Length: 444
Ligand code: SAJ
Image (cartoon, rainbow, N blue to C red; front, side, top):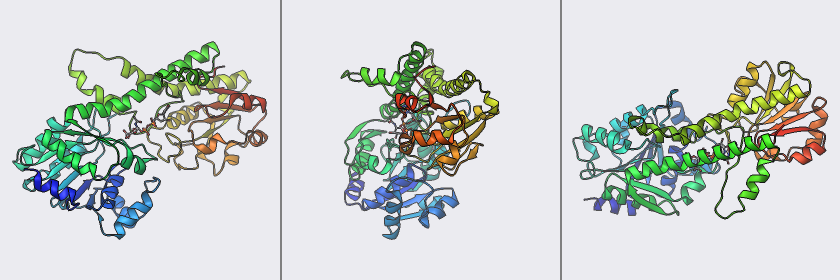
């Protein structure tokens, strides 16, 4: 049944529609177009569509600008906000956002709407691929049902459906799209094999075909593993602070064991993925008798690290006879991680908010990110640290790793303090240069 579509895929004659042109959809659409397919990108956000078609991207990703320019100029990539244009495409890829609500419940309205929009008779002989991260069982219980209802066709027989989660880290999206291996979870085996044929044409990484539930859980397990690992590193850091050990040295030593890989402690975990995916994984468990603790506790601990960072700042200021309400604090870094401009769920947001609620004078500086979370924005590092009582490092941008401590000290107030939330400054060097140094995992 799927043979004609396989032939079209292999010959790059299949037309592809990508619904949702955000941080995953845009690179996905552009890379399929660059591989030779005719791609139409669809997004409800008219301004975003206009920006992409005039090649002025808001999304900052290495190589993305040139890539999008190339495929728009070659005519292989077109963008529109007209969802009706999805009908023609042989392959419909869904890359819409699947956020969580304030009470950590999955918010699947965009996914449902996208599924409804593609569920009509034109689905016959076509392939639907969900790329958005989804809670377990969503492909079968939501997407397949909506598609069958709207089209009157049978999923896995009249049309095919697969879950192929993205694994691209912001800041390395293009390279990782082409090089990372892919999970392909089919609604049935034929669907999985068909989607594998498609991804084989664009990735150099391996393709692992499985059932859709396994792929859904595996995708969430990847980010949850990282979140739990970081929580362990953070707990270890809190222990080290109590007993006077340096957590970075401890982790470095423990990781020399061939079967140990402890992540890095920090002032918090941010971004669109690690802060959300553990909740998606836990979602179906709510209806069962099983009460998991580890994952939920890890989330809480990672969130607590922002409070802990502020506590450290307050304590060290007090020790120096200063009141937080009269102190100038410069926060270096607003983005949720180094070398990105994305401030989604950034630890800096909570740190800045708490410092401001304690009436501190907060000045922020981030060379990549314009967000300030209500604080004043410095144009450069000197303006940021001038007359500051305390410098807080909240993002591990490479430029902050090379801070000229000697110079910084001249501009800061007497008895300058560094609170390193990312552990990128060498404590011995900082102390030698006359700083009072505190960091995550390097206690009072
Ligand atoms: N962080 C630490 N300590 C560490 C590593 C990270 O505190 O040792 C913090 C970072 O500073 C950041 C947060 O964790 O605030 C998340 O950063 P990240 O680099 O772990 O991940 P993301 O959110 O940028 O991207 C992740 C990636 N997943 C994995 O590495 C398992 C990426 O491959 C996924 O595609 C992406 O989530 C996604 O979209 O799911």
